[in-house]
Length: 194
Image 1 (tube, rainbow, N blue to C red):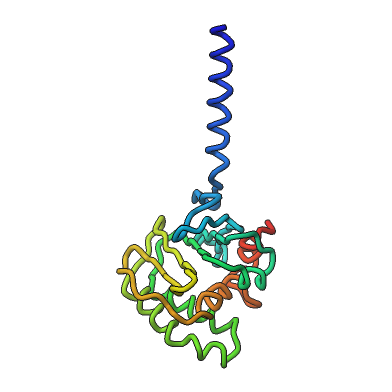
Image 2 (image 1 turned 45 degrees about the vertical axis):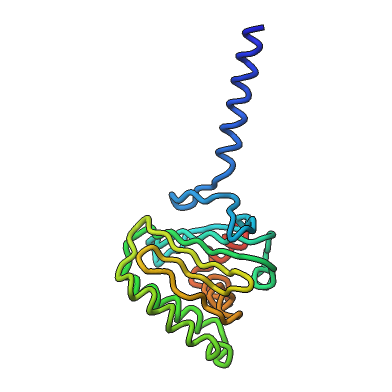
């Protein structure tokens, strides 16, 4: 009996270790949870990938939604909370990153739509400018909270008021999922296609 008990315990330990390992995925050296909770809503990892600039790894991004989405339109239309989690893989001037995000939004929207989010773009640019620098390993999140708005949380900058414009979160998502994404391979990865 003792041998059987030991065997059962060993198998149980292996199964627990396997399930714990399955709870995270590693992308670009960054561990991302398969599921997270944002304001009481369980979200699942839709996709994750690495943003490259030329041959250099810049950051790892993970997109969390309430249900799987395979197209940008499905991502925009998915109800409930959403999160984009970004972990830097290299040091970068955060003001420059803010400018790149602003440009990415503008490149993926028509002028009339972009003009509606300009106040949010200016606030976001200031948020990143206040940080001065993001170092490798630093993480920030962009959350859509229904009834609240878009929250951008950066550890080097105090939490600011939510971006109330309902189209602001989707405008940000167009940086990665729009017709002119920052990185085509990252777009595919965020949509769960790689």
